Structure formats: structure tokens, C-alpha cells
Amino acid sequence: MAKLIFEKVSLFYNLRSATRHIHVISREIIKPSPPTPTHINRYNLSGMDEIMASIYMPVVLFYPSCGTNLKKAAEKSLQLKSSLSQTLNLYYPFAGRLSRGPYINCNDEGVEFHEAKHECRLPEILSKLENGYVNKLFPPGLAWASVSHDSSLIVIRLNYFECGGMAMTMCMSHKLADACTLGNFLIHWAAVTRGLGEQVSPHFISFPRKESMTFSEFPMSEKNWVTKKFVFHNSVIANLKDQVTKSGVQDATTRVSVVTALLYKCAIAATKENSGSFQPSALTHMVNARPKMIPPLPETSVGNLYWNITLETRKESESKLNLLVNQINKGVMQIRDLKNLDANKYWKAYEDIQSKKYKVYLSSSLCGFPFYKVDFGWGKPIRVSTGTTSLNNMFVLLDTPRGDGIEALVSLTEQDMAAFKVYEELQALSSIV
Image (cartoon, rainbow, N blue to C red):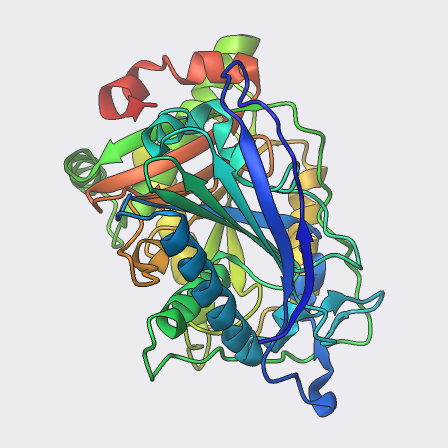
């Protein structure tokens, strides 16, 4: 394993009003081992990759105490660095750098690996995640931050707690991959760490590129929103599915579609509460395109391999739950049998919605992705979080730790959130954290 840089840093800052400190221990650069061959020193981005904003996509995995002392923590750290180096040998573009053109320079400049010790116990952090404390687990200001051309495409930090618990944070460039790829990378790395001989290798693909590319990057806005978590238990979701089925929704309804529709319905109602009148709205719902392609792509396919379905809600009468679920179901059916992911077509649909002056909401689901299966040899995570979202008017859905429901991270303006969280239907069906 090549350890090119080792910097020991002394850095202290407070966890808000708490008197506890974070001691940043080290920063290293981990490179692929063996080095990447020169004949594969360029990885072309797809059109869908080019559209994606150049930001870090964050995730944090929490692991309980397993009798970890300083010696065992050091051993774990060395083991993780060694297995990461091996993993990067197969995921070689991830150790490169963004170029000025539509490709990655696979130059083995490596990924950042940080370590920090917290003067607190893991339960204290878990109880404060929804108050913004999760961002303290990442290198300062990194979650959802811009990725420059000379920056590491992956930044990892191990956070050690006094109780022996640990939190691993990872930020991955969204230019390179979506959440499905991030989850598969973690699964592969964990398998290598455990010494498993057979791992499912990444599947790199290339789509036909057109001469004329008429799109640009998605714009990012300044943060002016708050994020709250709402939990929907499976029993509640099952009842909702029964209700919409009895209302005449014929197509198969998933738990993700019914929760997404409910959140969108309640957000529309919150806006009306604040403005005094219904506001025409739209929902853009991101769908994993891998199983929908002809032929279907392996789940380990690398890149931004998703497609959007869009609901336009022009009148208040169109915001009934069963109608919204029906629209989502039909949209998912319509994107089956995709032959390619045409970024020009995707961008045109985005511009069309923006031109109609709707209040636009974005929904993304991480449900079913393997984050709760990431076992490095000391057990599976007890909690997974992205901390917050990248945009206003956004819903991010995750599985609950026990698999008994869905957690929804909802980001709205403070005014809309105040009306949203007390909306009668939402209060009756979820618990807010």
C-alpha cells in the first residue's frame, strides 16, 4: 500500500455549546495498489455525469462499541487503509482527479483518509444528529461542498468516541457516481477488509456521446432551509397503500411511492397555508435506471445512472394522495425499457419544468441500497444518515435501522417547515425527530 502523505494535525473546536472537543489526529492520502496501468489513465464521464453538480455526496455510518481501545483502533485504521488501497485498484477512477474536460484523470493521486477523536460518547451524537451535529463528523464544511479539479474525489473520516463506538463518514464526488455506486463501493471495501475472496467488481460502462451537448451543470443555491426527519413505520405505510388501492390505483404501489406522494401532498398544503392560496407545483422523483435499461444493467454499474419522473400539479384537486401515487406509478412504468440515458433529453425536461414557474420539489430514495449491510468485520452499522440535503424543497428517503419503516429527511424554508410539520395528516402518520 502506498501512503504518500502523512500529516499530524492538532485542531480543536467545540460541538456548539458543549465543552467537548474534537481532536483531529491525522490526514493521509491512500493510493491504489498496485498502481493503475497507463493505458487506462482516462475515464470518460457520461452525459448524465456531466449534468450533475460538482459536489460531495455525504454519508455517515455509525458503529457501536465493541471494546475498542486505542491499540485496537490503530489496528482497525491500518486494516482499513490497506483494504482501501486494494479496493481503489478496481475502482481506479475514484483515485483520480476531475479534468477540465468531460473525463477523469486516472492519475492515482489518491483519496483522503482522516481520523479524529471526540470527547463524547456515541449516544450523545446520535441524539443530536437532526440538530446539525452530523456535520461535525465530516472534515469542516465538506458535506455537499463543491469539488474542485485538484480535490480528492473521495474523502473519508474515522471518528472515534470515548465509549468505543465509531462513525465513518464518506464524501464522494457526485460527478463520478450516484448513491447506488457509493453504497456498492462501501460494500466492496468492507468485503476486502473482512478478507473475503470473492467480491462483486464494479461494472464500468460507456454510453454513446452526441457531438452537440446542449446542457450544463445543475445549479446549486445558497442554503436557506431547515431539515427535519420524519419516520413512517411499515404498518402505517401498508395502511396508506391499502387506502390508495381502494381509491382505484391499479398499478403496483411501492412504499417509496406512497411516502413520496404523501410528503409532496403535505408540502403543497403547507405552502397554501402560508400564502393563502394554492400554488401550482411539480415533483421531480429520481429513479434508479439500472434495472430499467434494455438489457438491465448490473447494480454495480458505476456512474449517475438514474432517470426522473415529473408530476405537474396545476390545480388543488390534483393533489389528492391517490392521484399523486397513480402519477408516480405511471411515470415509473413509462421509463421501463430505456435503451439509453439521453442527457440532452433529460436537460430539456428540466428546463421545461423550470420555465413553467412551478414550485418544484425534488425526491430521492436511498431505500434498498446496501448501506446497512456495510460490515468491516465489527458488525453492521446501527444508524446511517446523510445528515441534511443538498437543496431546498427536497425529500430524501432512507430505510430505518431495523428495516421496519422509512425515514424521510425533508428540507423546506423555515416558514414552510413550520406549517408542514404540524399538518394534521402528517402528524397522524409519522413521528418527527
